[in-house]
Length: 373
Image (tube, rainbow, N blue to C red; front, side, top):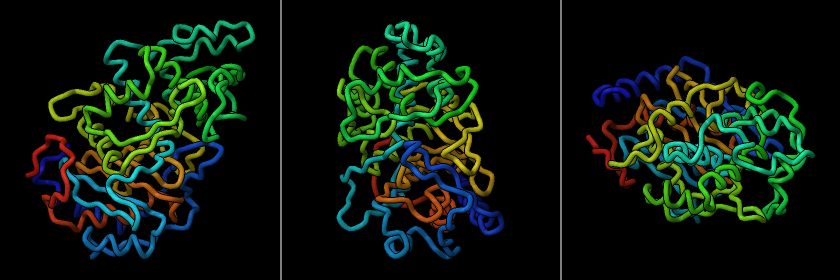
């Protein structure tokens, strides 16, 4: 984290760098069968002029990005900017798609902190069903870490959590797939493995995952307005079933920006936050732009070489965190935007933020407990 006094200089450097360095596109994660990632060959988003500030951003969004439902930017623990298109406000829920995966990662971290499970714990220790002789014996060796890093070893999915009301046998079906690769060795973006992790976590904490999330994560962060779809057996669909407001998306990012701490409470350990946003493999499809993968979080540097990590999903949903800038961006959109959400953040939002006063003007409090200087 940089010193507060250096924030304006760093943002100015960011703006200059964006004019000199080609912008990149990174993956929009989500349902591997349904979601279109950001691509290097996608049509680039229109660049924001250097004179564009956050104050001028609403007009730009309304004119050029009609699909964007909401955009919230937080700096120094408060809302520095927020935009809502007509018919949407701060209380409007949006389906965050595969951002749900990153929330599941946080819940795993909380469970680890509470001693409910271990990263090296195998499915054979969590799900007695894997001992069925009809199931590939390699499934028993898959660990929690393998599921977090999308390296379970399962081959490509043919089924998945795609329907609004998935069948009750969904998660059991995932166990009956063949393990194509040695667990822990091959990245395969797999919704079904994430839903399997949801079941394993619910078994480990011995309660409904939605209830666990309410008690251990959402309530401490002041998140009361949300929806989380479940399958026919009541297991939360962790691949893409969560709906949140844009402000609450920002809270998720701020929790990780603060290394797992919210006000005076350590929600998830700082070591887990660092581990989950560190590179564990090179990632792969649906990413076409080289974004690496942590524990259900994507990571890649900004266009000016600053470390960033993000949760992303279908239709350009994103929570984007740049720790060195003390900045979190959250966006909900009705459909994919030109160039993709990561490109948009780098091409439009960060330059606008760089031309805005520092310290920022707070337009709303997130009750983070972090003083504005």
